[in-house]
Image (cartoon, rainbow, N blue to C red; front, side, top):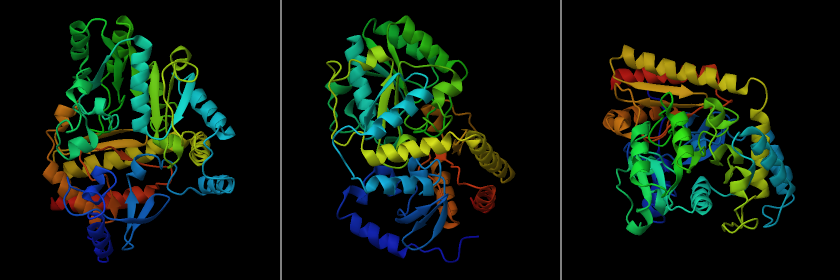
Length: 432
């Protein structure tokens, strides 16, 4: 039953004003709700597994600020640590001890990382790692996968997922063909296509970059042998393998997808969780590759706010919380309860739906499936998803406003939250 108190008057007023101030009224495209219709709700505050909008509607949140809130929003230990650091200053533009601490934690956790460089976003990390791939190999071409999103850098806006897919945009205007001419794209989970690209471009490909578990075309896990196959192909061709773990890092396991699947890339990009909700990114990998980065080596990359003490502090405390015994077992349990319940309800109510989860990351597609690639994901009934999204929103459940985005749970979600979500889902599914 739709919450009788649900209203969006203030959100609508604020968004109307925002549209005169910012393109589309937002600072990031998918927030505009264009693919699900209606207008976005404007947040006022967050706590634990919940968010409240400016009209004081409360929602169970499965977006988690797009991944970072894995311990729950505004975790008291994270907030306390931030307040202590805040008293010392917000930005140094100089080395701080917290960089060492977080760097050691990342290196200890992530199999591929022997050295790490902090930046300010996942996009920045991916842009830098692309330059590093090319610098190290002396080659210009790279392979990415259709529907994988690595930020909004020019060279990555080729058959990208996420907001580009949500808005139905082709490769972005303003991106010169000369920039993307060295970006090759293959279908996700298709090793033969990758082999063909290497065969057609001998000794020209610097490396392969991918989301080891796709989250920006919806939730799409790798087929058995896919990651292992990429590792073998890149080694055979003298190319580098890069895992973009901005989304999966510290979320599907403490050591990320590479620990979960037992495949170690040469380089890794991180973000989201390692900043505990503050702007952050990082890239790291083998020592011999990372030592090419300035000032150790000739490949230049810099950033005034990189290693910001507040972001480092929030990241340290978040990783400490995640590293407690039982954290990932709980995340897996709570997320499986949610996804299994949604799939059962969809079947009971006669909807063709598929989906799955790994630890605290999940997805639901309005298609019989299975979904192995972006092409499969595009067969979804996006109109039905829009109605599903609105129905859940009106019943106090906040989901990503796009069929092409993964969902996230947190340590703050309870079994009662999942039951309430499934009760809402049963009503909505019955009405679609």
